[in-house]
Amino acid sequence: MTEADVAASSLDHFWAVIPAGGAGTRLWPLSRAAAPKFLHDLTGSGRTLIQATVDRLVPLVAERVLVVTGASHRDAVVAQLPEVDEAGVVGEPSPRDSMAAIGLAAAMLELRDPDAVMGSFAADHVITDPQTFRAVVTRAAAAAREGWLVTIGIEPTHPATGFGYIAVGDPLPGLDETFAVREFVEKPAADVAARYVEDGYRWNAGMFVARPGVILDLLAGEDPDFARALRGIAAAPETLEEAWSTLPRIAVDHAVAEPAAAAGRVAVVPGSFGWDDIGDFASLETLLRSAGGLTVLGDPELVRTLDASGLVVPSAGRVVAVVGLEDVVVVDTGDALLVTTRERAQDVKAVVAALKEGAHHGLT
Image (cartoon, rainbow, N blue to C red; front, side, top):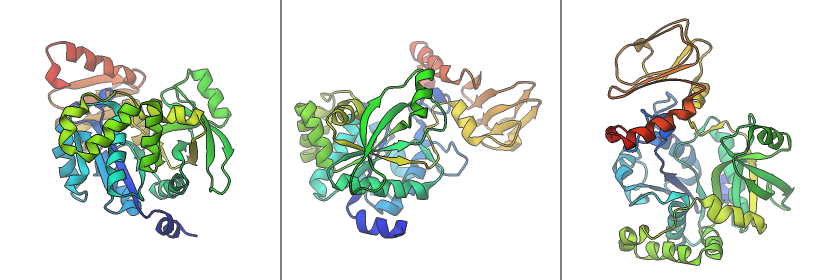
């Protein structure tokens, strides 16, 4: 059976839910609170990260897309996604972490489509093999129809310490390439990460597929008031503004996935499709890296280099020259200039924190 045949038979009533939040502070000054990384083209493809996310999901869901983003970003998201029904772009009044966003989408779909299966996929991930990604999601949807909360486990390419991991258990009978989840584990130390990779653990990319009612009922088992509040907002959208600030601030992993895994309710479908969450400029440089020398995101005519390597982003439109520096990161946005190294790329968030405390809060 081809991918198209599988999709046609199993993805009726399948919905894509795209939580679009987070400021991406390690990618400052490109990514800021007013224009987070999912609104930027960080791959040089001509499509922003959220546009690319919708592009790879449309073959599975057609017009069945819900985006939950910050109220201040809603207009920009609507402008970037003309193919998505404007009513399907929900603006959350304030950040409440992923459980509130995904849970609200689940509550809305529970009312709108009783036969729905939803897949939650972050707006700011990069996937280089969308066809394989869609085949993996199709298998996850089949398991979700059987009542499982399904996650997609990314094949590790190295013992990363910046991701959580999934411990893969026994195969599930009657489901193609689908396994029980023994547990979710937090971001490990380097030696532990190396052992996880050797033992067949998978990266947790925060992709979940389930029936909306399964997600909400699992949440109700841990926090019935939270689940009740989400269902209440979906039933009475005019209460969103008032009720939102009362919701707990917690990630879906902690609120639902971890306790459900402990209860034997979570399945994992392994996936190898070239995944990256572009967490900082080091990972961006790795993703974009050219054959040698300096990698440029933007107009290469604006960059001059001599005996240098690393990444340059000349977003201000002026010439950037780099001489005699190895593994450098230079990002010029006009109102802010970042110069660091790939090794220290994670520390950019500390600069953002300092700016927020000082007199330059508007730059963050």
